[in-house]
Length: 86
Image (cartoon, rainbow, N blue to C red; front, side):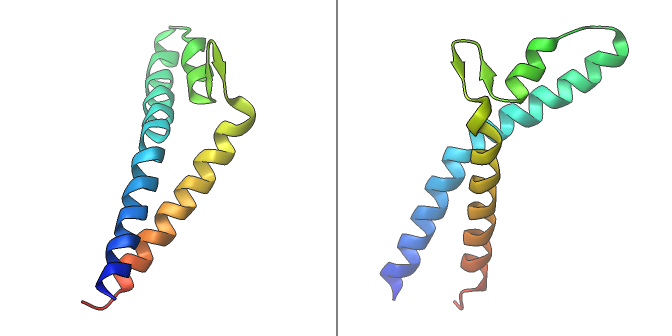
């Protein structure tokens, strides 16, 4: 039983670590763009980053799907870990 708890936590940590970088990129690029726009600064490249287009690597068709699925899995696995009895 203890091993199962350890495996759930390892899986949750891996999923969270994998999804953290794209989530942070999306959050930071969207926030900076919304701050710069009223100042008259046109930083369209931030919107491209926000949607998954990183220049050479264009992940736009899959980026939002990946973020959504990774977020849902992270939330569900985190809730399941919290519901476990000590």
